[in-house]
Amino acid sequence: MLNLYRLSETAAAWAARAGALCALLAGLITCADIVIRHAGGEGIIGTVDITQMMIVATAFLTIPYGFIADSHVAVDIGVERLPFRLQALCRAFAALLGALLMAAMGWYGLGQFETVAMMGDRSQTIGWPMTWFWYPLLAGAFFAALMAVAVMLRHLAAAVTGRDPAPAATPPALDGEAVP
Image 1 (cartoon, rainbow, N blue to C red):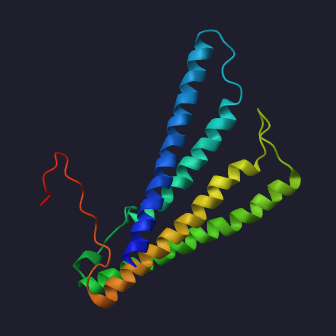
Image 2: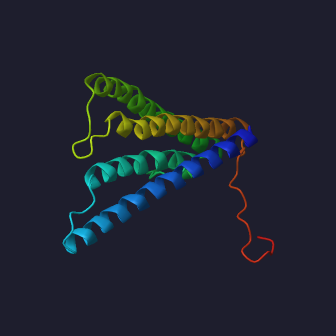
Image 3: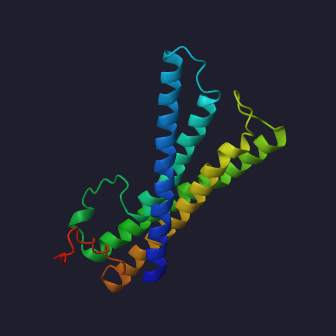
């Protein structure tokens, strides 16, 4: 189970890197468009379409990492004071709710995707098929649901065994020395 969990962490980290790259590209394209327009040019055709797609990709490619890193915003009113196994059960329940939310977003997104595909909708400026905008949303939503399930299973295992089956990996030393 630990190897599968570590593989999930790695996959989510790569998806988050791709999402960060999309954010960088959106920013660079927007800045380049502003500079070109300020210099008297016509700007970059399709800036709005491109940046909208990049921002959707940024959001939905980074959400899975938030789940697997267990780093979403949480309000621990009283949970921190519970015994370890009860804390783990509460965290498993929260992960289950997250998985259900992301799966529902993906499921209902599929319906919207089908409608957009059936209508043949295209983006306003450069005419990209609007289905392209749905791919990162759907992939990210379903991947995030899987990551939340992995987190739920981790916390359920912790509740049963009384120990975390996938403790945080030891960060590598910066200068070659062992990390305490």
